[in-house]
Image 1 (tube, rainbow over the protein chains, first blue to last red):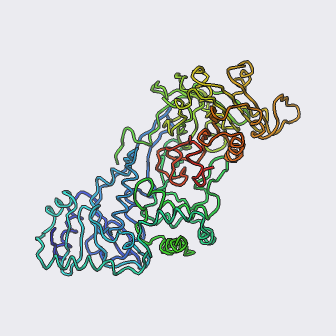
Image 2: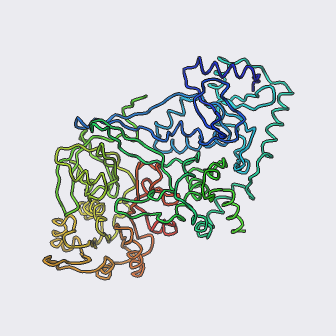
Image 3: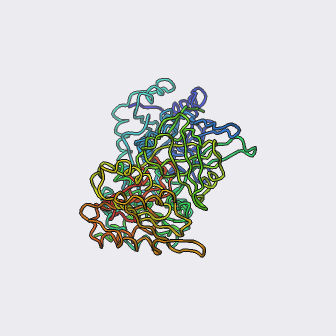
Length: 343
Length: 279
């Protein structure tokens, strides 16, 4: 553990921006919302954010990513591509750190996906504990309001300074190289514990049951009327997929330049709520109606991926709830209603 | 930017060695990997075929693993990639990833009677297994093939199917079509595939049914087989789903927690009968 003065923290971030070879990304205000973006100076950093529009997933699974380059002017010329920009990301809330860990598990499974993993390996993740909580967030119910792993450094605002937890050697080296730090005393530790203990109380949204009951609840509610009732208003727009830190489905397309010679095979974010997601070339659509697609996403988060990987792939960030135009995506509402159905 | 030699998304170059027009919409492509390696597949597995500049599509392998000088893909022109393949000629290059999926457990089927039930393009992956078990004919019990398609002119691998009539005692077969148009000759059954099931004589205790066809077919065929006393453990299906990666990542082929590209496409019915959305 280290203590870094707020004045020294600004210096630390500015040194990272000017001296470190990696690109420094942090949370910035955009209108009345927050986003991850490249930092020009430490002044832009807003560690008091409640939630960002998109999660830092966008850096490790970019919305559009080149997998291959091809040249059609010769017989068969294909080059594998992995665009990696090493990053230092400052200001990742615990739920997003846990989501990144889940994505790493997925992309490491059976066939390691270098396009994802190399980006992660070459980046430094600096987490921050929540000062403010989005009205849609229910991370405390999902056990993701705090985390003891998944970061290189973890910052907690304790008033005049940040309490810094060291998560890796890389994180410690970064501090040694660029920051003026001191060791925490009893007063720092007490303030840190008070902040951590106060986080859970800041959440307005809560599950009415322990999250680990979720897979069992979903196992009994496949035929619930809730799916069709809610999905009646679904626009099949995929916004819930788009903002989700644990949605990782993708489409793959070839995009050829206008000269019809060179081109790229790209992968782009896809969404299981979109109408064509499970449609095959012959026209058969294996999840044709909105209700089955709507149900699939909740089942996948709370049950299917749990069966496969052992974690619930919902970290309670609440982005889907705030991003849904017809307001049907709030997992707290869905899961609490289902819990009542199985009582 | 890092340029890597190979990632899990890199196709291997391959050359089209032979093209045979099989029906109006289906062609058979014989493919050789440019490194001259055999594909190394099991019957029932598929490959991801790349036509660079167009895209990638999952195609089941139609040839048995016993054929090692290249492999065959029976392709219906129905999507972007398959239409582009149909426009290609001998000597053209395609990309291959795979083989993917589990395929049929040929060892488990040894000593058993086999009842193949194929509808339309479902014959394409099944032909790999049929020719495989014919190559090791003594390892298997009775073999019968029920094969149905829309019209007589839609029959795939018609030359091979016609030769089956001279294979008395080796392979029993029954063919059906939905309709026969004027001018077409057809001496076999007319009707949906399930109308063939009563014609096949099989012992439910020793017989394994292997089913591949259009999605609508499974429910009816399985129902008929169960009426004849076939246990769920003896019903083996190969399922179709949309696939992009073949690696259990892109999410398209997911049936609940099952990834068809990894856990399938071949499933024992008893293992998926309670899996919603599967059949």
